[in-house]
Length: 273
Image (cartoon, rainbow, N blue to C red; front, top):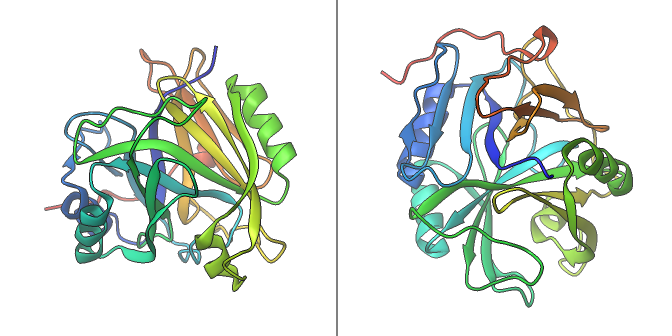
C-alpha cells in the first residue's frame, strides 16, 4: 500500500514570521497549532492538502529551480489567475505566469518564495487519465504534489517507489518552462519527468534537471535553505535521505515522529506577533 497523503513540507527560510505572513496573505491560510515553539506551520482552513512548515535557516536561499533536492510544492487553486495576483501582492515572485500544460486539463503558474522554494499554483479543469486529482475545497488548498529535482531520475524514483510503495503514474518528456528560464535554455527544450502516486490523491513529481544544476549548499548546522523535507503519512515512523538531496519523513497518524538529531531544526521561536 502506498504511503500518503502528503502531511506537510518543511521550508528553510531566513525569516519564518515574514514568510508565514506571505503565505497567509497570499492564500487565505491559517496558522496551525504546532506543539513546538521553534517553527511556524501554515495551511488551508478547510484542511485539504498538506501544510507548510517554516523554519529558520542560516543558509542563503537557493536560486529557485537550480539545485537538486526538493524543488517545489504544488497547490490546487480554484482560479489560477486570481491566485497569482494575490500571491504577487503578498511578496511571492512570479517566474512563469498561468499557462495551459500542453494537452492536459490543467492551467498552472510557477512562483518562488523568500526561501527559494518553488510554488506551483495549479487550476484543475478536468480529470487526468490514470491520475486521481484532489477535489477543490478552499480557494487555495494545501500541498498535493511535491516536486523533486535530480540528475538521475531512475535512481531517485527507485528509492521513492521502494521506500514509500509509490505507484508510477507517468514517465515522459515535456517542456518545463520554469527550468528553461532558470538555465537559460530555449522554451522548446524538453526534460524528462515522472510522477508517482501516493495515497489520497497526492503525488511526487520527479524532474531530471539539466547538467548545469548543482547540489544545494547547506549551512554547518540547522536545516537546508529552501524546501528540505516532505512528510507523508505511513505505518512505521522513519526518515530517510534521497540520493541527491532532500529528506522524507514518514509519520503515522497516531504518532508525531521526531527526526534524528542530525536532521533537527536548531532554531529559536519566531512568533508572528
